Amino acid sequence: MRKHLIAAAAATSLLLSACQRQAENLVEVTGHLFVFNYRVASATYLLTLKKTGPIPDGSVIIAEFENPQGGDPLVTNQKIYPIDDKIALQSEKLHCVRKDRPYSVSVRLVDKDGKVLQELKTEFRSDLDQTVLPSKPLVVGALYDKNPEVFKPDGSVDFSNTDKCPA
Image 1: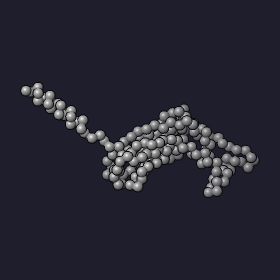
Image 2: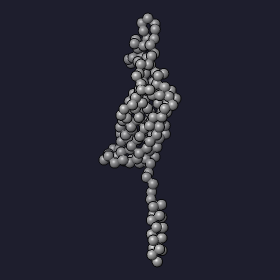
Image 3: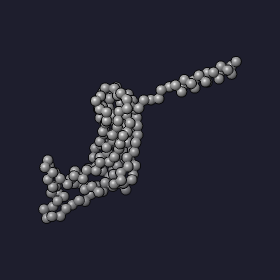
């Protein structure tokens, strides 16, 4: 009799655990890439997400991007609005992005009280080295005038990249 009770209890707990609802995904990654902007000599991470469930008002997305230069991660906080179906997160300017090297990003969706609703991780990989970008913007001002630090009065140009990056 005791063996039957133990077996029945084990079977019941197994069935109940199988019925538990999986944690609902509220967002999913739809794209991730490096944005190299030659005009202003900058590189950034760009991560796009799609809402897949209802997100409580006042929620924020916190993304921690690996810093290609080393050191602390680059953190971006962005408020989520009910009207948003797609969410784009862009990092601050990057330095030292290397071709074919994986860079990690961690994303947390947090409600207004600080409770984590969802966490996800993904990787970025560039098919270009950041050394293709000049160190100085090619243009300046609202009219996109040639930058005199790049386009010299004597007709020479300086497209060099002077970033000091770890090996």
